[in-house]
Length: 350
Image 1 (cartoon, rainbow, N blue to C red):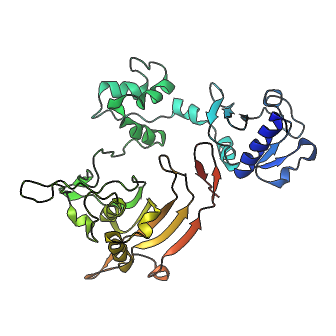
Image 2: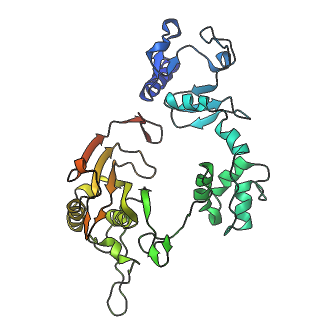
Image 3: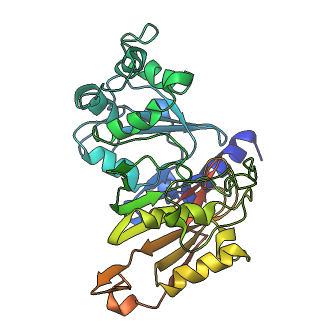
């Protein structure tokens, strides 16, 4: 098999894994699926050509070039189109959704970015985000890269993420959530209708240091958050401590969705006691097992836990679930719902 044939085989496999139907140009069938990948179509030759099966004869909007190991993607609708390296082939519905939008993401960044809230920001931080810093004048793309390199503006990545999604009023805080929660109002924890999180997996719960009188030095604020129990100090089992914090800041009837390592489902000791408390109060609604290597920094498989806070019924706290789901937990095995990428796997969306 020639190197070209080997590369084509790899490319075909990745396309099919992403949901494309791979066909030869001689047996082309556009009814075979949402996304059709055609053999023998060279990018440079066909990108601007008038294709006989295209009634509008418009140039192709999205272009892929791949060796099987490297994938370059070009959106010709960008103000300055150029090939950008990507980790995987997009699923067919993704470019279809992009094509249906009047402007590309980069066009929207240039014309529709909300105003930057500059309170509590240093001049250098404002300059980095707006492209007016000493190294970023007129180069917004370079400013985004700089944000990940300059130590003093690391937290700005989160603000940038919110701005890119059109949210300029996000209340972002930086502190140890378990030790000292920052979303506090009037001396009390703030409460939310929905809590969506991806906490760090299996970090240490506090430490084993002692005060001079022999009492534990670790003294997290609002200890009532951990009413189902605590894992041993210093143990790398803070997962269910994070989960209890999430529940503590969820309003009555509100919902939590969080990513956890599989260990929280079966480890014994104090974690077993915490799980028993969650089940007894009918807080756990669903457990969704997903594939390994989906998240940056860890190749292990994970589970998505969905919980619903209780509600007040007179003098009692009762399950907040709909009547037909009370006393039940839905288990979903989705460990095959993914496609492989070069650096990590990707969750299928449909």
